Image 1 (cartoon, helix red, strand yellow):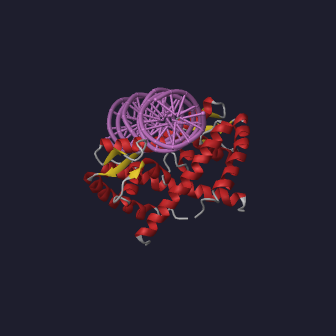
Image 2 (cartoon, rainbow over the protein chains, first blue to last red):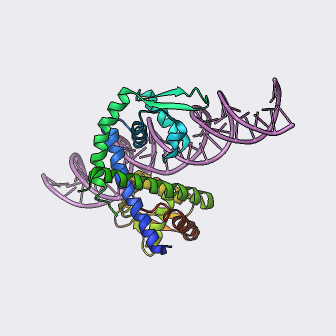
Image 3 (cartoon, each protein chain N blue to C red):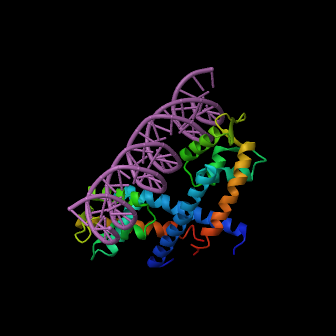
Length: 127
Length: 127
DNA sequence: ACGCATAGTATGCGTGTGCAAATAATTCAG
DNA sequence: CTGAATTATTTGCACACGCATACTATGCGT
């Protein structure tokens, strides 16, 4: 059990760190690659297992986004041609999501920016 | 200088911790007190120096919110009667913000919820 | 006094989000 | 085999946010 003021302190630190980094990330990814942070994180997770198709719910599982937000995020990515949604034949309630060639390229580019921002702003706001 | 995978790891952790706690906080504060996280944080900062009036810009300084967001947040708080905006006589460009009696009460109530959520969810997602 | 650059706040606009309800497909009781 | 309960995803809606811009008030040079 942690003391109350210590908890508050940790929260304030977390809040500050997160917002500092997130703001820069959002801005940089948007300006340089036209991607939301959520869109990039989604791509990042998809690419990590690009060998296999992933269902929406699998994606949602280790994402901080709500199901509805994820649905729309994938929709945007699909509209941009970075991702494809295909019906799951086994269980037609499910939807498979796969990264396209374009998606792979955009992700590779954005990844550089992403890492750069982390290196620059995550150390600065370290705990 | 930190290694690249380590940075990524720290970021993922930060992301997860923040979102876990923030989501619960937002929900709890909203359900129990009709307050946004931003509204509560604003109140919290105002109450901390309730002896003195604070200008918008002073508030903005140690807040993660943009100026426009802060402006609207204070506007909402004012509409709810938790806060009062008065012109700064010295420099009439500035606006002073003060907490009302109602604001103090609501904050005191919400503070309990706030601390409880932190205690419950901040340790769980500790680094 | 006048105009011009600057500071402090507020507002129009578009966007992403979460919640709750809707839709679509599957499973299971009877 | 039919209808209720369940799972997977999408959509209607309202809201908070950031950016760029507009608006008001100071300060300063002339």
